[in-house]
Amino acid sequence: MLTAKSLINHYPPFSCSSKARTQTPTPKNSNFAFPIHHSPSPSPKPRALSITNSAQDEAGTPGQFRVDILSESLPFIQKFRGKTIVVKYGGAAMKSQELQASVVNDLVLLACVGLRPVLVHGGGPEINQWLKRVNIPPVFHEGLRVTDSQTMEIVSMVLVGKVNKHLVSLINRAGATAVGLSGMDGQLLTARPSPKSQQLGFVGEVARVDPTVLRPLIDSGHIPVVTSVAADESGQPYNINADTVAGELAAALGAEKLILLTDVAGILEDREDPSSLVKRISLNGVKRMVEEGKVGGGMIPKVHCCVRSLAQGVRTASIIDGRVPHSLLLEIMTDKGAGTMITE
Image (cartoon, rainbow, N blue to C red; front, top):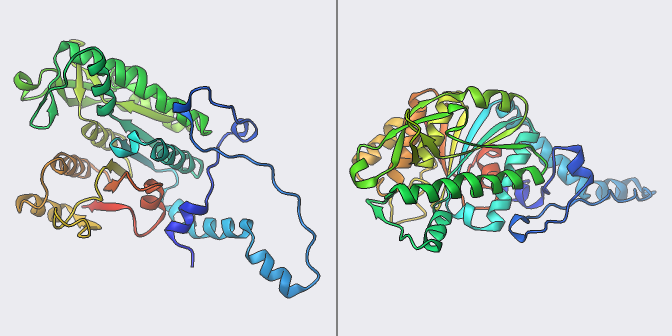
């Protein structure tokens, strides 16, 4: 019996473009390296004379195994083919090169089988590193970054100029075609100050989404990579929570699914018990868990983001464990999933 684990362990990385299938450039920078293996097809072996032995050999070949996997994946591919999915990327999956490779390869695979992925990212650890380089101590208030004018400059430089372009490069090298954007490009996002702006500085909220710039990119098979920096009506940049941006974009695009990659297994019935994962829950159920105090801390804004997106027409929203390799494929291509799915 083929399982989700066998799928992710035995299905090799691949590429959408013919150019990527024939050329594998050697990376000059190890930070951009992740496993892409291309090898010529082996020469066919002579068939065995014995029909019984031939059938057994054929059933055990890697080619037959791949065909079986593709056959089992067909219902999931049919379900999501042509549908837009918005993925928020961050946390542990962004820190580890191995998990970074997993997320990138998953996105390319999903694009190749007909899904229309949009990637939204933050980059808190990178921002902290660069703040320390310029001797600006990171400051947080109630878990949110205090962003004065100097910090906002670093945030923009790191998220827009470094993290975003790094992800675009990785996706391009994996065989798809990515386009990097910030919320300011094409007035994709318009920001407004947070109600706590006196304490937080230039931390903003999403006032308006105009996905006009995204639609032709998605329709032409590109993967938009969006960073969570936007400007208000006067042009002042704001740092916006990436979960919030992902949820609002998913709603504006009429996405089939919103997926938030996190550093935890998902929503837990008991926050102290990792084995108490809630696999599927309704809007009413998750609201009840929040009221009962079972959902708290950093999970509250993620749940709030999912609830808002579902209320605006997104079909399902999932909070999944980004620490699990190929968690995106597990969530989309299997019944079991990789975290908690919230439905209406």
